Image (cartoon, rainbow, N blue to C red; front, top):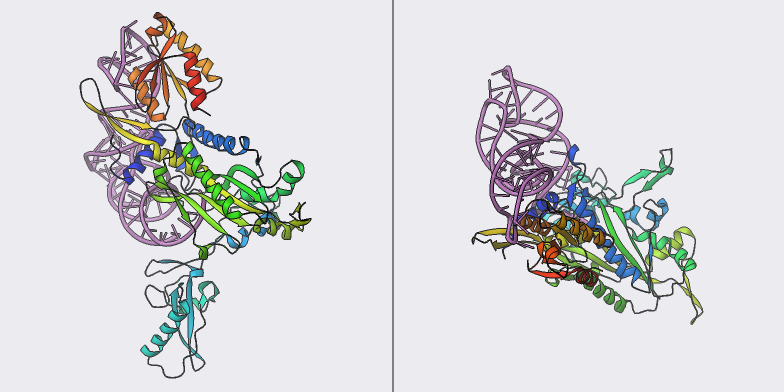
Length: 508
RNA sequence: GCGGCUAUAGUUUAAUGGUAAAACCUCUGAUUUCCAAUCAGGUGUCGUCGGUUCGAUUCCGACUAGCCGCUCCA
């Protein structure tokens, strides 16, 4: 087997195949495209739906402790104030116009150099464990170089967001050491704004949700009051989310409109959250393997304690080895009771449960596995893509392109192929089988061109099996078809009952 | 958003200051056609806008989109 020479080629090959076979198109392509948005074509929309269905079936339908939810995309603006997204979902950035370096304003520190009570200059340093000491040392160096006499006051470190308009031009760039090249911090909220109702004013502002999670928190009491759930239990949701990313990148990996599959798993405040956290990480890893992602491409990344939000007890990301690097696929966060607490405070409605044992009310804690459907889809495309060298009858080496999707998520489960399209006996039998399969599975009927070409066409679509209705089917007893397997290209004869049994076992 | 590179059929590529080509794909027809069989035929292209020019797909500019880096994240 051969594969594209390097990662860049693999990515190009996947993008090209995805377009050519109708998995993924750039959005609004006839108008020049729109950065950060994509459309899913006939095969892509089937693949995506299968990923969603597998997750929903395994998590919501096949577990006793998880229920589903579908909340609205536009919610009350106060939801996003309480969640912290209005204030905190921003990245204030500062550019150095000379060095072209970019800094996070809250990670770029500076201080005035004060000698004998007079400000004589400014120094800067990037955030580190000893930012204060570095600034102090820089201030002393500054004083010495400028040959200023007097008493240097201890520096007061501030981050760049605290700099006034007058101070910004005086602060030196960490890259050049010279002032004047830094831009004012530009903060932009990553939430898309819109207006609800006829009037467009401050009171009509609403947001397209940047995550689906808040729906589960806001409807927490509704679910508790209207269903028979008992702790521990989860509320799961699949839906579109929107983020006005600065730089959408890496194909569908980071887009501005994307689809999330999230669950909030609520546990007692005294429950062993670490154990529960670990169990859900394992569940997620197992699930990814069940839809065909190889274990060799999966890894874990535990966020360091000091980088966690103050309310977070721990976050572990399941990483996937994409062609452009090992990147986050699934984040499993232990969020304590922060979100329910925030909504209780903001809404004035307690978000508590009653503990019969202790006779006390408490706010449940939560474990949150959050994954992007588009990221999973990209992962299965990249992991499943293969180019093989196969020899034809004459011994010539030819390239076979194949997408090795798990039968669970393959957009087409079976292709029904009459060996010839001008023989009524063959096409009639093929149509009958096709119609019967169609009632339960996504199937394709293909009578175009040569049989070999049709097999290869299905390989590129990732179809696990082809059944060919041939002359043995109609001339020999047994009513058997040729079953051709995608991965091995092996052929064997199979009856209709055996075919349905195979599908029942493999497609779930 | 900033910097670098790029843009020709659905895909991958070629040529050209004088009006665009090939392969694959797709479609139609013929054929007892099982690993991109064979034969015959068909559709389809210079990202957008502007400038220079007698004439621009080619040169220049802007915009849009893509790739890489800064940054960010499901």
